Length: 502
Image (cartoon, rainbow, N blue to C red; front, side, top):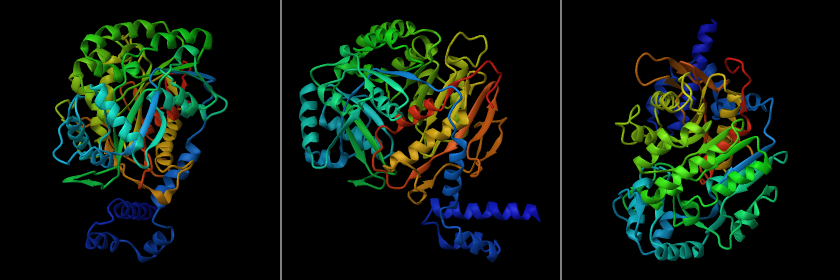
């Protein structure tokens, strides 16, 4: 009897999931499935509302997300900061008298035509990206048009400043932010954030954020999901000019955790600059006290040589944790010849098995999954629209169930512009079943809505996956990745010397 009840319950969840994620699914297919269920169960299912899957996950999060035993007291964040000008991408391009056309990716933007083609390239994929605009005068004209565009909004921008803002929302934390902080940015920053005087400058750096909505059309291009395209002509952040100031300020500030971002900004400055500057950055980062963990937040990059330098011989081995999305993860594999590097791009929701393969490869090749390695990297926080994964080398981090669930929860609420999750405004898009690897041997895994963090191990690496309750009509996508990483770090702690996390 109990087996039948479990089977019926699973079928009921399946019907709810099919209906909720595919509202246009042919009616006869839903009828076929529902006819196999007892009418008493169907009526119960209807009475329980159409949001049962989302409600179950949201309720489970509340009990799963618990504070770590040892919490951070002081966190230092650097080194990219700017003003984000957020506008509708299609509207701004139309205002610039640019006509729609075909998409083409450009590593560096040199003109309005390059901007249009690269914007379309990512819009038709629903993918986030960031590029450097090389022509200062043309960029300033575009920035002026963006600032004057109806509905344009100015926000705190730059990964470091956004992470700092999120951390500062917790009043018990003391947050240091180091980066090129101009007068407007200083005005917008949370008053709880400490900014070293050496970081202040006379003018602000501006980044333009071109957003688009799910289903938005421009010419023949249609966005499969909401996202944004970012570009700038930002020399201060591009040269990481405040990095040494940041590291020097740590001696007095004495943080328990250091969060570093902005490396991606150097890519647009050309190899002649980044090659030497990256070596200087490594020397500066190496001056951080060994007992202070360092988290590196990655962002969109296109130069494989640059990414390879970050991975193999420069930055990645000397940080403890990294945060990244699906495009950045695949690009890591492309740059380093890792698993699935023959895959040009993800097709829809990234396959969990493939993602796991690449995460494991990064920790084995460039982290401390290899017990004989001297690398410090032991944690990767991966996020994509539908789900998040925390991959950690056993024995180094604790409270990761709570951490990955907290990151997923903030993605759900912040995308909808809310302080808490509203189940009527979100939908599950994560796979309900998946594999631990793309190839054999592999483990078949199932997402349990009542306990929505799925855990598995490969070697001495543990993986924690949480679905995201995806906002149906997101209000703002910029800064979601930074909020996710910040929240995940807040709920994480350095483990004691026990062999594995409970």
